[in-house]
Image (cartoon, rainbow, N blue to C red; front, top):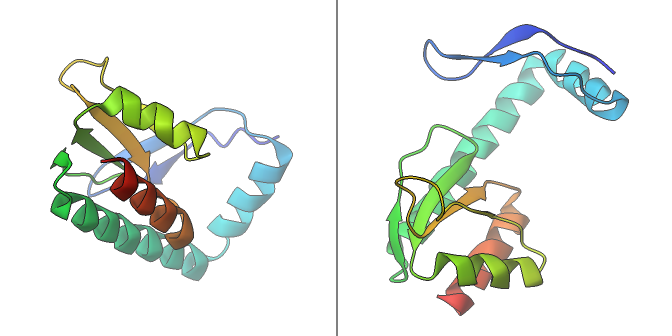
Length: 130
């Protein structure tokens, strides 16, 4: 595997420190992405568009209390009965992270932004559960 050990731009003047070893498959994918600025920019643009679309859909949902602002590849969302929603989504094969046991995250779910199809499945499931 590769142990990158370099800074990756995050947002504004912020950077992520990449210093953990990663496996061969992920190493090849990372090196390929880094060698293609167009691919990297397209991936970023897609992520930003999907994050905005999912956040907007969640903000309009009556069962969602709050969608916290995000500059990351995930959203922190406050919903009633977050533990139940978390478990119900898991039974459907949709994995989110329960954060209701973290300080200041009452009824919190951490939702990673995926592909448009993955995000659509998540939104459909939440619509049925909330």
